[in-house]
Image (cartoon, rainbow, N blue to C red; front, side, top):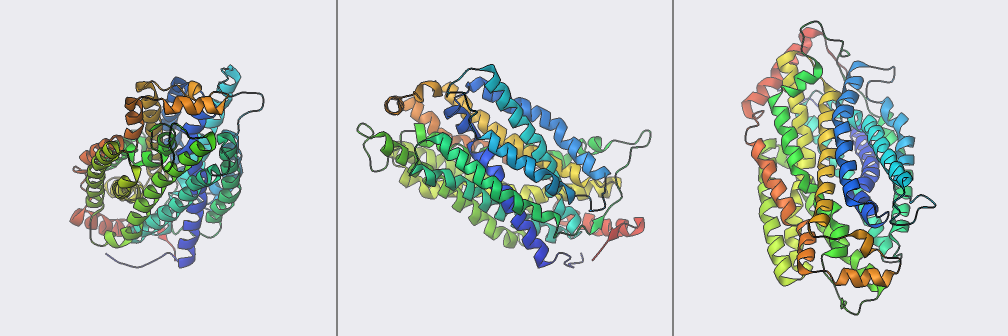
Amino acid sequence: MEERKYVTKKESVTYAIAALGQGLVYSCMSSYITDFYMNVLMLTPWFVIMLMLLARVWDAVNDPLMGMIVDRHTTKWGRMRPYPVFTAIPIAALTILMFLRPIGFEPGSQSTLLYVYVAVVYVLWGMIYTSSDVPFWSFPNVMTPNPAERGVIISYGRTVGGIGSAVTVALPIIVGFFISDSATKYAIMAISMSLIGMPLFVLSSFNIKERVVHPNSTKRAPGEPSALSRILKCKPLMLVVLAGSLSFGRYMLQSAAPHVARYAGFYIGIDRNTATVEQFSANMSKIQMIIQICAAIGMFGAMIFLPKLFKKFEYRTLMISSCLIGFGSSVVTLLVGWFTKNLMFCIPFMIISAIPLGVINNVSGAMVFDCIDYMEWQTGHRDNALGSACQSFVNKLGNAFATVMIIAMYLIVKIDPKNLNAADPSAALSIANSMTAGQNFGMYALVSIVPGISLLLCAIPLFFYDIVGEKKKKITEELAVMRKERGIEISD
């Protein structure tokens, strides 16, 4: 295979910076929306569960539709480049609205208008985010025809995007040491991350070149399979989609951290029976910070080494290995944390448990693009954006499953946020400290055994994925010949 490099350093850096901007904004939703809905707006758990699930049902239509729109239209600015520009302002505005408590609605309000407002903002945010996310993560497919170079671009983009996520996650924790009001913390996060993140994201529209120019997808001829049909019949891609959906637990170390900090019963340097409201708030920030730092170290540690690991190991091997390591570590995290009652002893094991977060986020995207190569090799059609839409859908589905699992745990252990967030902060503190051991255990499971089981399930479909070794090499080499014969342009 020709190892020619197509992408300039400036383009790679621009793409990574744009991913940083996207990460700043996306992490607002993925890490904190459950806590905001449950413990700030105090919406009913069943409403939040149904909102997440119904929104994902709509995404099952919206994401592929967006992919087909992108594949069928090339503007004078390019096929992918216009979307970050036109979606940045709406995404920023909706992110801010998502984390602002509407004026006139007190916490726990059962007003129908409040529930309608929440649902409309959440669904609109998801739709417009998809309009930018699908083309943005399709960029590597048109930046270079070299699969190895493409994989490295994805890895760097995901890694730097992860830094953006870490910054967003850290901000409310740091603010929590000084401000105990959660609504204020989340408002500061949403406003600042949106105003910083979206201008960075827009850079991708100006400094990235689309080199691999395929013809626009056209309406299919009579009897010809549709683009969606090609996607659904691609066994390797469906295996990646299934594995990605089952790996929802990789998000939980981050998204469940605020819930564990509130209700799992861990205390550092204070007595739970005599703690003041201020001390309790600071303790929550400490617990959350420990968990999030562990997640960041494990995730970034994996991401840093991935470009080198790509040269030695197949994508499938990296995915399966990380899932099994994550499962084993999650079991140890559960046992050590619960029986010692000391979260500090769990730090090395939580770090190891976070390794799959870095591996799966990066490698699954590269595997999706290999599947798109496979489909082009088989059918002659290349559905860049539609294939990437599968990845977008899986990521959002994983976040939704993580959210549903968190809320389901509230219901299983019978925790009602409305009772825990009484108007009197001292009353809320007293109720939180009087939880049963079973309730504490259930919340702690959200960052230990629950993610572990998810990762174990994720590994199973990957054993049947076969775009590896000589088969992958053959596909790449024959595709180069096919593209030349079809007159597909690859510019410098």
